[in-house]
Image 1: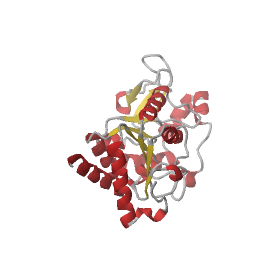
Image 2: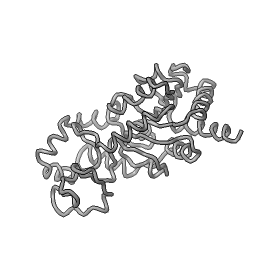
Image 3: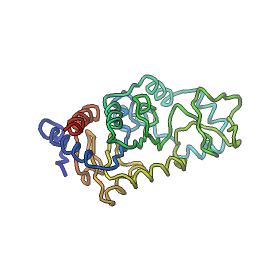
Image 4: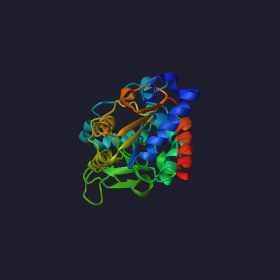
Length: 269
């Protein structure tokens, strides 16, 4: 395991960590990236907690969000369409955000045949915009709607909202945003896909994730227990730092392109 000290993001230490990360990825059979909010922050999307965080400014969201939605979905939709406060700030930031160098590096890693899947906790659709294909969005996607009954999804601009709450044309269930609310179960199809990827994974990239939100935070532990390798890419320490095999103590937009360059060299050698 590389030195997890915060100074490991500088100079020779980062270069050594990049080489070791590339070596582990090159040797692995099934590489999966677990992506958290840190990658989105690099695209200008504000975090939820900490300095400048939306919840820091506007207060913590309702922990009974999904329960309240079920109690009065019409009211929820009316409030959502009014777009005020933290919700509007997040919508504005998401609409302006573009994929950064970290997103592009993951896309290139997939094109090279190394990265088999992305499990993202982000809702911003930036992986798709960057060109990545194999993606499971465990917390949903801001550009989609989802039926809570059958899990069918639609792009926002392809679903005509003619009544509140909207109804699924297939099963008659209620339709809401695809993003997962507090208290809402992770959609079964997404959760099953994540579990399958974690079971197949023998090398997991931990990119910009605080490793504090479950069930996503449990997947690296499953990989480690099964004998897989963990590569942490994060400017900050996390609860997973001590068990990571390699730590790149730098933003993903800085470190992941270096890893991809090294992988290209290994592929050509």
